[in-house]
Amino acid sequence: MALIFVLALAYVQSNTATGTSLTLTQTHSQAFLGLTLQLKCDVKTATRQPQGLLFQMNTVPKCTVKVDDCTQYTRDTDSQTQYTCGCGQQSDGNYVYILNASSLHDDVEGNWRCEYEEFSNTIHVNLTDPEGPTQIQMVKTEPQTKEGDSVNLTCSANCLPDCRYSWTKGGQDLTSQTRGSRGQVLAVRGVVGDDSGNYTCTAVNPSSNKASDTSAFLLVQTSPKRKVDAPFAPTLKTATGQTAKMEVTFSGDPRPEVSWWKIESGSLTPVNNSVGDTERQDIPGEVDGSLTAVLAVKVETDDDLGMYCVSAENIVDTTFVYIDLQDEFDEDARCHSQTAVAEMSILRIGVIAGAAAMLLAITVVAVVFCRKYKEMKRALDCPYASTQRLGNAVVDSNHYQELPSPQTLRKQLPEGGYTLPTGGTGWVFSTKVDLKPVDGTHPISKTNPIYDHIHDDNIMIK
Image 1: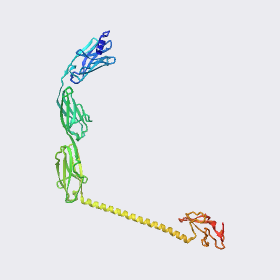
Image 2: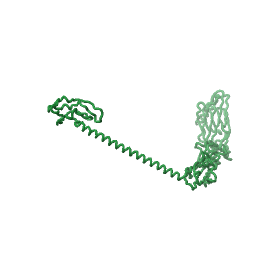
Image 3: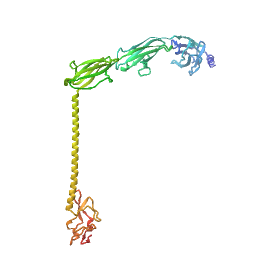
Image 4: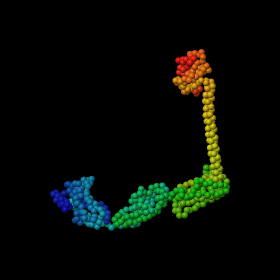
């Protein structure tokens, strides 16, 4: 009902436009089953802009749109083909109406017409049968690819409509990877040895879903490298009269050529047959050009010892590997010598530590003896000297007292004072006494309250 209403609205315009033209075109020259189709209706009018336009096929309305807001009013929802429509203003001020059809089915074939008022234009739409893909092929930009180079693989096929392309390497999809495909071209930048392998391009017809593929092997030429999982000894020890076998395994594409050298006076000297033979051994099952180089050297003199070198060279690069051939006996002697030096060092350290301990012990004994001697001498020279507090006197414990005339004192009173000899007078004893530090430094004079308890003939002298 809405579609009938819009049609009636378009046909009951009160004024007929003059100078109006309609041009209906198919944007793609061919339409294919399952793909998309677009129809464009250019409307040119000299008097006023159209209010709405109708797309119909074989007299059956499919979609209507109004120009003022490009609103889609109706569309056919019963068809297997999906339709949408809209419009837009061009740079010259005129409008173009667009019908988009997707998931095309057989019902899209027929006469298509765009109508505005009494004006219309008609074209016929046919579905084209898809073809291909056929004659698919792959081309590599560089015939030879070395490490670090870049390579483009280009795939092409005869296809109607144009085919879609996808890429795999050894069955692994490359589409979502950094080195993924860009349509017909697969670009690989900075190739490494792991990029070698079988690459497959698949072309798919988007209308019929028919597919065809082709494959090509990409070989990346790599520089020689020592195989880390193969036997190798950077240092060999041997003895005079024995034969040392040096062995190095290389990988590389193409397979490298190897040569043995000996370093003499800072330069490389080719190894001749008098020193040893060079033999090449292919590793069974290896496809990357792996090769094992073996050199056997019979050590007769010291000149046969030293640094040897093996070079591996191909068209990409040259690699050198060094092996040091040493005298096993000399090495043992050096080890014994180093052990003896270490033992002597330990013994020397022990002797020094023992002497230091003895010196420390002697020093301690000497200090103790000197202190005891000073104490004994002071006791003999000054029998009345004392570091103890006498009576209520306050005496510095760091000093001892020496009475002015200890030989004239008669006896020590029980209360800690002293009695004077008979006929003596108290004033001859000064309250100023010398306090001699225990450590033997210069004595000092100080008033000593001990003399508050000196008596004269049993009479206390204050």
